[in-house]
Image 1 (spheres, rainbow, N blue to C red):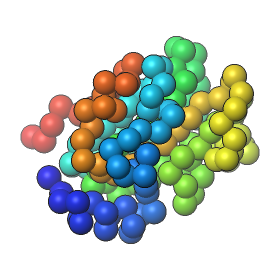
Image 2 (image 1 turned 180 degrees about the vertical axis):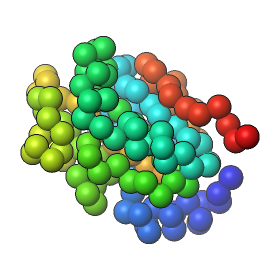
Image 3 (image 1 turned 90 degrees about the vertical axis):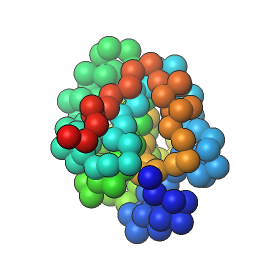
Amino acid sequence: MPDAEEAEGSRARRGAVVPGGGDGGESGAARDSRNVFVTVGTTSFDALIEAMDCASVVATLRAKGYTSLTLQIGRGLYLPRNIVPPGASRAVLRGGGSVGEGAADEDNDEGRDEFVVEYFDFKPSLEQSMRWAALVVSHAGAG
């Protein structure tokens, strides 16, 4: 498990931020009872994160009644870029579009037809993220 210094360095290198400012708090999306939380733990599983980074996945989750998606990317090298604007770790998607279609707005969270997407690499505990999720997606572990 990475120590706090290693995790902080990793966030700085990738520009990712821990929701809630890294104090163990959660963002609005994580508190949403219809949040999907995808976690890879302390490993990497770029194929899973890349598969979730897709407008059709967001459309499917919306159709099932989910309102947000949180990706915990661990040590992975793949950074979401299709449903989150490059350089950002959070986006609010409106309508059915993807980031490339101009459907993302990082500053305005208001509205009924919004879907919040965010990602981070590490934080001290994932317990609260899992408790607040309506659906948890993860891998079965190494090996």
